[in-house]
Length: 221
Image (tube, one colour):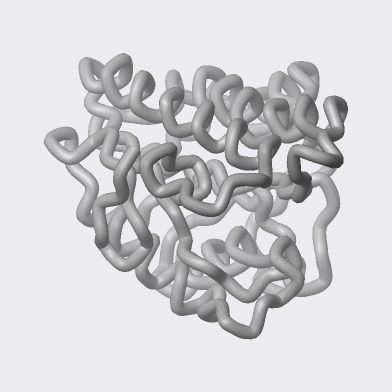
């Protein structure tokens, strides 16, 4: 049985990660600002009241974990606020950077000492953070924050290799969650997470730092 920490665990993809990991017998630590009834019903360990953009909350979480070894860390919490060139919102852009890029980096740094050789770190990003794949423009804050997360993930893959920790940079696909207003063209969280866990399970130090779609496709930077 491996131990996995999942952020943004109260709904959507994070909740589904917790559900599938628990179903296969892993120990799950679900991290969120506020637990949901669906998360509580799983019976996993919940660490709530954690606002990952606050350094004090990251410190609190590490203290709660008390040095517990973590075989997998899945940094899933994220924020999407759509905007175009005509309605740029500077504060919203800054907030997306804090939530989507800076918070995962700071939490990863805080947890690496609890990750043994062979552990895996998964960063939930988006193909909207691909420069080469951007053919539609717009979504400035979200796209910019995900590009930042992607390059942080690549640097983490380099820096953590001597510790034996591999890093996956993962796009979940278009998933029917509240973040995208349950777009009917999306796949289910269950289908997405099944693919995402396959990518994490197959992750090695040799493939560390790769930008993957949940379906196994390697995405362009």
